[in-house]
Image: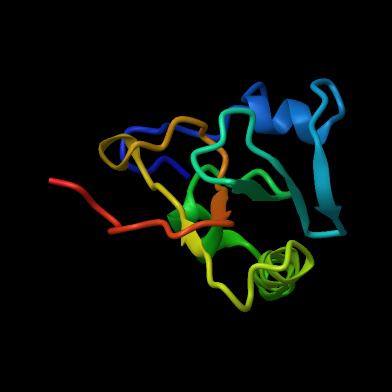
Length: 125
């Protein structure tokens, strides 16, 4: 599904390569539906990316074309990763950019999980 100038899913994007094991990552969690790994350029003390295993270009694509099992499995994986990292008590931020105007850099749906410190306001103007 082409959304916000991202075009169709590109199986050569970096996250697809990570899923295929062509590029290494520091895995935090993996199950049938998702892979969670540390961001290579963290923006907080804890900065983990969680990606679905299916070929979804954006949240819009994932939310409209993924199966109910994939959506539930991915959502539960995100919550599990937050708990696994001990972020539940202090709090954390989930962020997903969708489209070029929002800053999405990789055309594979993913969420950023930030925590480990006070994160401040969401947007700066």
